[in-house]
Image (cartoon, rainbow, N blue to C red; front, side):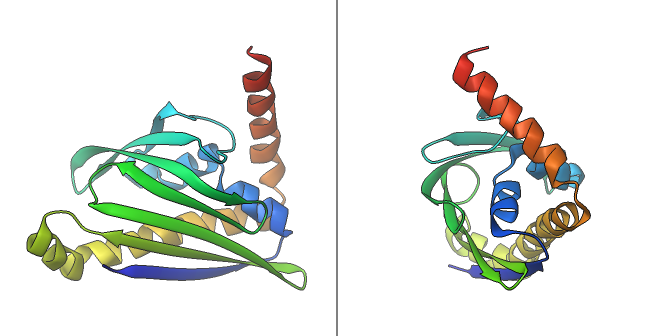
Length: 170
C-alpha cells in the first residue's frame, strides 16, 4: 500500500491555493496528456463536501472511469477525496494546506492500493507509483503556475459563476 507524499510551495494566499486544488476546470487543464474530463457529478466549478465527480481518461492506452467523493472538508486547510469506483482497489487523496509567511505549502498524501493483488503490487513497483507521482506533480505545477501568475481569478471567477447557477437552478 504505497503512500505518495508531495509538497509544493506556492507564493499565493492559502484560500486561493485551496480553491484551485478543488477546481474541476483546473484539474481538466492539468490532465490534457490523458484526455481527462469530468463526465458525471460535479463537472465544473469547485467541488465540495459530499459531492462526487466521475473522471474519464486514457491511462496506459485504456479508457477508464474513476469516481471520487469529497469525504472530508475543512476550508482552507484540508480536503480528502476517496475513490467510490475505479481501477484502483482503493485510494484516499488528502490535500493539506498551511501558510508559511507569504507562501502556502500544499501537501498531497495519496494513499492507495493497486488492483489485481500480487500482479498489481508488481505493476506498482515497476511503473504505477512513478506514473502517479508524475501525474500529481504535473497537476501541482499547474496550480502553482496559475496561483503565482495571477491567473487564478479566471478559474475562480468562472467557478463562482457555476456555483451561483447551480444554486439558482439556472
